[in-house]
Every structure is written in C-alpha cells, then in structure tokens.
Length: 190
Image 1 (cartoon, one colour):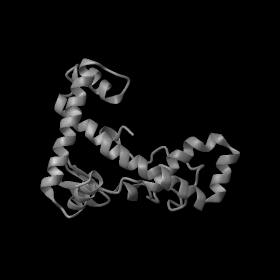
Image 2: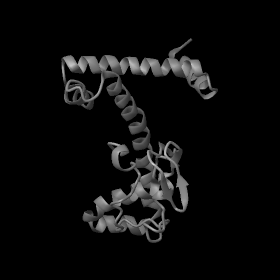
Image 3: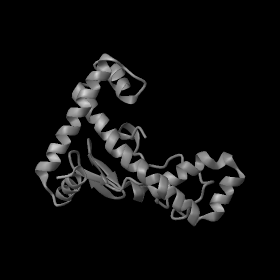
C-alpha cells in the first residue's frame, strides 16, 4: 500500500473511533518526545524541549514523564490553537474594515488588537474542567468542595459585566483580563 494511501487509511480509522490506533499513535508520540527529551538532556539546543530538560527536569521540578506530557500538550494544543487563530484573525479583520483601517493608521494599537482578537475569537472551545477545592458560591449557585465544574472561556470572554458590548470587535478595547489562555495557575504558556 503506498504511503499516502496508508496515511489516509489511518486517518479514516481515527475518525471512525479506532481506539487501538489512537492509543498506538499517542504511545508513539510520547515515545518520540521521551527520546527527544533524553537527547536534549545530553546535548541541549536552543529550543523549548532543551529548556524543559535543563531547567525543569534536571532541577527536579518536574519528572521526565511530566516533561513529555508538557511537550505533547504544547505540540498538540499549541499547534491547533495557533493554526486556527491566525486565519480567523485575518477573516475577523477583513470583516471589520474600520478596525483594520485603525490598525493601519496606528501601529500602536496592535498590542490591544492581539488581546482583543484572542478575547473575541477564544479558539479554545472545549470547556476547562476543574474540581472545586473548597465550597464556593458563584452567581447564586453553591459549588461544594470536590464537585466538578466546566469553565466556558468563550462565554467568560463575552461577559457583559466585564466587557461593554461584548459581541463587538474593537481593537482599542482594554482586554487585559481576557481569558483565552485561562487564568492563574492553569494559564496556558501561550
């Protein structure tokens, strides 16, 4: 079977829910990243895996297994979100020509425009699952310690109590509190 045909078959099997193939692919990826981490431990380069090896694993801050998990998360989540946000940002700017014109007229607006694009688009669409560590009341709802909650970042980034006219795209808006990457201890390194 030609390589391209085999690749299509594997993708088709993934799409049809072949858990055994998904497990094998995950194991292969983690194996590769483990080998890469070990190689970068021996011979560091100017890359993130080398920094994980020399600054986190070597100091005992995280284990090699945790470093592999971090590398996999950065590869998968980092690639997907970046690959999606750039074309969506272009489309958003083209759909808002007055905002694009403002950016062209004043390059100093770009930092706030990037934050606004992250808020407006919020490309991480899976709810962040968390476990309450103590009893808390949010919006009149009591959440007990140990109960699970799902945080919808896209809803938080469109909260009218935080952002005036939250469904509008405004490159001049102060969005320093946007949650596209999460918040606090669980904030994405992105």
